[in-house]
Figure 1 (cartoon, rainbow, N blue to C red):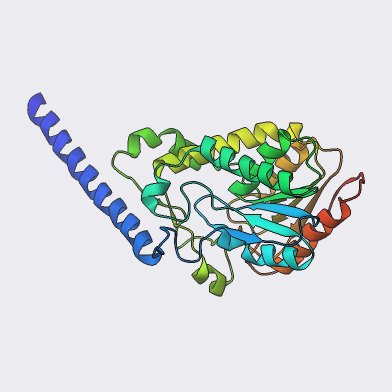
Figure 2: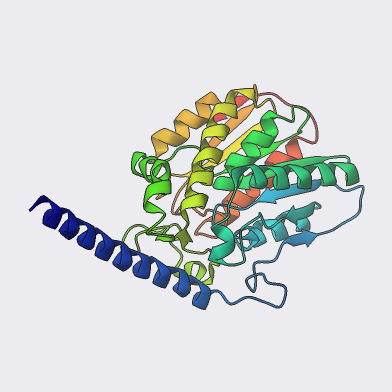
Length: 305
């Protein structure tokens, strides 16, 4: 009887595993079908952005979010360029290609790639600012903590806290990842990261996460939150009160941990998580550009808005 029951359990478990794997594989195929690749192996429209001016002009490095691409920062990049900045938005490792590439995501590689881009810009330009969106903000926080000479930092809806359910999922990823290689990044029936329907339709994010990417994201967030007290650079943090991924309380808590003597938290309204393409994005652009402009000369203040 015990042997029979054990066999039955194994059969059911195998059946569930097969169904889960097929469902997850379908999610992965959907992502591939929705995001065709160019001849360079990069999703069409997801290429790195490089907007150049004179070498004597200031420069800004912008970092995109997890599972996303430089496309979410294209409007901001163009705005900064028009205001006199050289702008670079690199494509982070594992991003903007295929979900198979994303399955090899690594937190150390993300940080190393972003840090190398900053060093390269610093060798080319006298003044270089740094800003990151979502996970890019978490990477920017780590870089700023290790770069006390950074003249100005922008954290745009920085992903510095994870919901408990996501933390549990990331912790257990080695177990469920065997059966589920891809999971949807967001419930399609839940709140959206981009409220503007036209911009949501243009978005080139994978729309899925892999077990490795989820673990890498958790490690990136953990490291960034721990690094916040070490940030000395003047820091502007911009957060939407309608952000579907970051609770206002978590945003406040992260801001309070930032060690910079000069820091400012500004709340915007009407946008989801991806505030650089959503409703009201122009205010975010103005705020960040003005912050960079002001910090080409020293100042000192701490406030919320």
